[in-house]
Amino acid sequence: MSPHPTRRAALAALAAPLLPACATTPPPAAVAAAVDRAVRPLLAEHAIPGLAVGVTLDGRRHLACHGVTAPGGWRPVSPATVFELGSLSKPCTATLLAWAHVTQQLSLDAHPGEVFPILRGSAVDRATLRQFATYTAAGLPLQVPDGVTEARLLDWLRGWSPPSAPGTARRYSNPSIGLAGLAVAQRLGRPFPALLREAVLAPLGLAHTHVDVPAAAADDHAWGTGPAGQRIRVNPGVLDVQAYGLKATPGDLLRFVEAQLQPQALPAPLAEAIRLTQRGWDRVGAMVQCLGWEGFGPAATREDLVAATSAAMALEPHPATPLAADDPAARPALLHKTGSTNGFGAYAIAVPGRRAGLVLLANRNIPNAARVQAAWTVLRELGVV
Image (cartoon, rainbow, N blue to C red; front, side, top):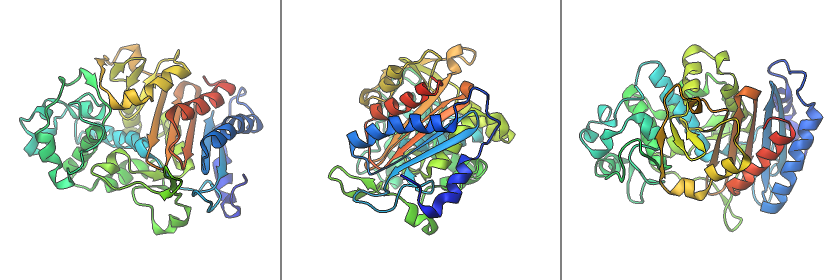
C-alpha cells in the first residue's frame, strides 16, 4: 500500500542513504521484493490490520508500510505511524544503564541496596544491577504480581526469596530489568523518562520515540488488535516504562538498530554504552544474554532464534553460564529482540558485521516464530544470514 500522501516527505528522508553503499548491496527493487514476499503471507495468515518493515543494509534504508493503523480501518500505515514496542523497550533501558556505568554515575556491579536502602541486607541485594538487567539476579517472575503497587514495590522485592543463587539461572523478567532502570533514575535523582530522553533517545535522533505519545502525534498513534478484534492499547503497570512501555515509529526503531551497527559514529559515552549492551554476559543454550539484547554466534540458525523467543524461554528458568569478557561467545555476531503487548508485536534484528538490520512492527500480537521467520526470510534472500 502506498504511504499516506502527507507522509511522502518522511518516506523520502527514510529512503536516503546514510552511508555509501557497498558494491554488493542489493538494489532497492530487490530489497522491496524480498520484503513483499515475506510480508504478504504474514499479513494474510495472521489477519494483521497494519504492519511496517524496515531494512537497513550497508547504510541504505528501505521501509515498507502495509494496511491500516487500527482494526476495522483508520489511516494507512505510514513512516509516521507510532507502534507499541513492548519489550523492545528493554534495549533502550539497558543503554541508559550502560551509559550510567560508562559515565561513572552508577556501576553495573553495584547492588540495589546501594541505591535503595530498604533493600540492604535482603536476599535480592546479593545480586548486581548487571545481573538484574540480564535476568540472572533473583529469579523474579515475568510480571510484577497483581496487588503490588509502585508504593509497595520495594517491600515486595525485600521479601522475595530467590530460587537460585545470583548468576546461575536466567529467568526472563520485567521487574528484573525494570529495577535496574529504576535504580539509574533513583541514583541520578531524575524521572526515568526524562533521563532516557536526554541520555539515549535525543542523542540518537529518536524524536518519535515516546513514553507518552504527545498530542501532536495522536492521529499517528496506532491501535492494537485485541483477541476479539477490538481496539486496544497497553495498560499502565508498575515498571512498565522501563520494561515494555515505549512507542515509536518504524523509522525511529530502524535508527536505533543502525546505532547498533556503527556505534563508533556516536559520541564517546553513548558509543561505549551501546557496545557494552552488545556484550554477551551469560550463555543460555544456543544464545548469549546481553544487556537488553539476545546474541548469537556467526553459525546461528533460524531455529536458534525461534527457540530463543519461545514461551519456555520467557516463562521458565534456564541454567546460565557466565562468560568472560575475552570469550569469543561474549562478542555475538547477531543481536535480536522481540517485543509484545496485548495488541502489538515487534521484532528487531541487527548483524553488525554485515552492517545490516531489520525491524518489524505490527498492530497485532503475532507469534514470535512468525516474526523471526519473516525477518530471516528477508535477510537470507538478501545474503545477510
